[in-house]
Amino acid sequence: MEHTVIKKWIISSLLILSITSCFSSSVEDLMGPDEDKNGVRDDVDLFIKRQDVKEEYRDAMRQYAFYARESFRYIHNRDESIRNSRVMSLSRNCIGALYEEDIKNFESTNPSKDEFIKYMGALHKAERKIKKALHRVIYNSWARKEAEKKKDRHLGGQLLSLIHI
Image 1 (cartoon, rainbow, N blue to C red):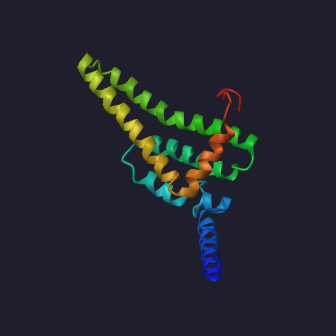
Image 2: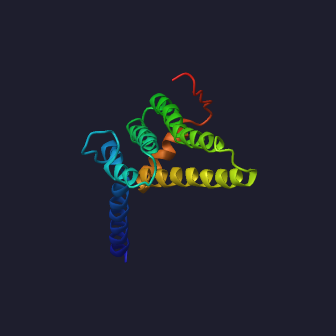
Image 3: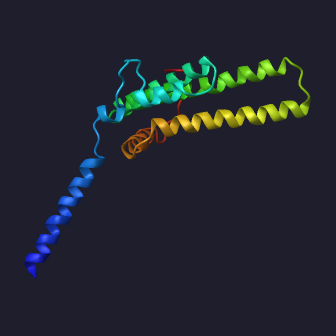
């Protein structure tokens, strides 16, 4: 009987150790491969290339993806993580700024109120959709999601100024 309990304890301990080792990722694993050395993980780069958007949008998405990838490098350094988060926030806002430019261009066509509301709704939906999809691709594993949570914990109680970087 006692021999069986020890055997079960050893087996469950080995199982826990093997599961834990699956989830502990190095910074290099989190950052992932970047064969073309543009600073964007290859799978994220491929996702961006496949988007049916203007090249300026792709550039803004790559900029955000670059800083998101860099954020994994700083998950163990609170100050650098906070600094990187500011830049990530600015680069994410660049995506939205491009949509605002499209709005101004549309306004110049003197649309009716209904046309404008319909256009704004579609544009806002498209912006939200692309940002969410990009986020899902960047944080596509359990380890990357946990690293993002750790980065977010570094920001706990921080007031981020987007002016001073």
